[in-house]
Amino acid sequence: MERPRARAFGSLRSRNVRLFLGGQSVSLVGTWVQQVAMGWLAYRLTGSPLLLGVLAAAGQLPSLLLMPIAGGLSDRWSRHRILVVTQSLAMALTLVLAGLALAGVVTVWHLVAIGALLGVVGALDVPARQAFVADIVESRDDVGNAVALHASVTNAARLIGPSIGGAIVAHAGEGVCFLVNGASYAAVLLALGAMRAAPEVPARTATPILRGLHETARYARSTRPIAAILMLVALVTLLGRPYTVLLPVFASEVLHGGPETLGWLMAASGCGALVGTLVLSGQRSLGQSAATITVGAAVAGSALALFALSDALWLSLALLCVTGFGVMVQLASSNALIQTIVADDRRGGVMGLYTMAFVGLAPAGTLLAGTLAASLGTARMVLLGGLGCLAGSLAFGRRCRGRRASE
Image 1 (cartoon, one colour):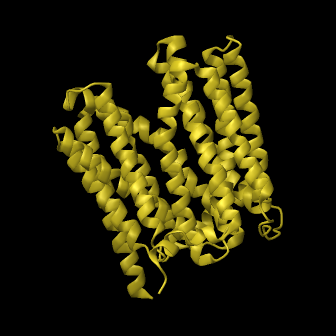
Image 2 (cartoon, rainbow, N blue to C red):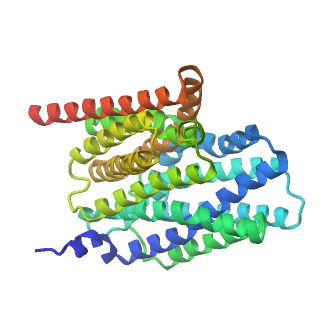
């Protein structure tokens, strides 16, 4: 019988997976260090919350526009080479920002411009990086485990990076944060350079970009499990995940706290997400069943609806932990299942659609959340979002059961 420990870290048998996750663990911490510094610097320079929103939108909008196209490109070109190029460009942009900040000449428009360029680079990078995970595992059965471990690294960085960034800003300034992040990209580039050659993408006849995007969308739509997964991911992105931008309102007006309370709420959600990825890493069957996706979305929606009704700090923290757990279980399981069933020569394009649903729609979800919160009230908006996620999970589960029954 396979030991639980071996099952939980099965994909680490691959040297390429070990290198990839090692480089990502360093780089993602640096990314969160920079996120804290950019937000703090923008607010220090302008004192305007509006500019914080502009800065966030500048980095997110390219994802919505470019990720589906970028996914198609990663099916034509070597994903390994794409990552080398995108990580090198991100390093260069970050070091330019560090130089401006350390020289004392940085302005908020520098932040917006470089943030937008980093958003473009990220839009090209993320679909290739998501699809690259399946290229480097030794066994197809380890795809789900590698996806879960990658998500674990991502969530651990989300917990560690901001605290490091805050300490560096307080003691050395924002420029040093940007310098630290620039240096962190070296870990990814060294890891990519040290990898044994991953399988090359099968040669495909070049097609116009828009036609290729149309073909990918038609393929995803005609493959019913993929279409259902993408719809549920988009629904959770639009209705469920935007609760994070409304946490300051809950911390102040509902729980009658301050910045410390907000910090606890954010940490609770992040801890739940990290636990979710660690639990998934021990499941050998991840990516072989849609049941985990259904349960994850249902748990997240139920906990979020109950959080909207809570006015006790301990209960709110517990419910946010469960919400973070459910959202991450749904997303990581969706990622793994798509990569398991999609054709190899379509994986990049479909992962472009996945990342658009997961990342690109986030600005629209944030705007929708703010609009509904202003008209209905914050608690009611979050309650509706949670109930919407719960309803979506039930519809997804029913559709999957109906498909199995018809087979």
